[in-house]
Image (tube, rainbow, N blue to C red; front, side, top):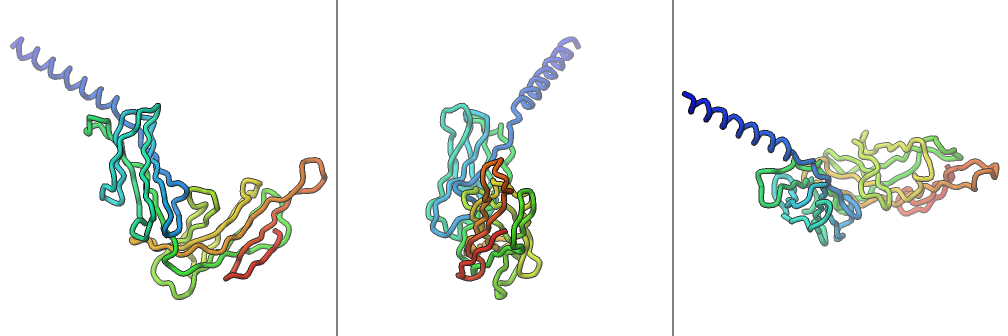
Length: 248
């Protein structure tokens, strides 16, 4: 009887210890980012970077449910893996996630990252991008940009507003008919840059259009104390290949 009690106590302590170790091994969810951008032209090279503060791990990149590639993290303070996609085509478009597990212990793994949608542009006809508003606009106000797709394109699509140099779309919206509006609120110097838009299939194979002609938003003004309030100037390509210029 005493032996049975001792065995039960030992088993209980072992189970508690394993549960404690399991709780201690809950790993943080990794992040997944694209460089230079998650929206790129056909033929570009893209690097997908999966990162975690956990060391000594092995990473796996998935496209949908399929494992695309596996990489071990180098010896460093933090775990990070890079997955290189050279000369991307429409077949590379899709939703990617990354995950990782303890090196040498695949049973201790983290939840997958949030999905990253990679779009490869140039497979649908070019949309147009224009500004609703013209005339002076002071800092802190709002500008609305309208992206419109050609009438012949059918099926459910989404629109994305892009800013040159940004790794991800500024905004993603569903259309109202053939067009959608993107509102840029509380404008500041940080909103300066070249903008364009694309539309893409809302489900696989996620074919994306050629990017619209660029529209430049520029915050103009002199240094503080000169008595001139800052304003926005918007220049660029609006519809087709006609260059226009307006100040907002």
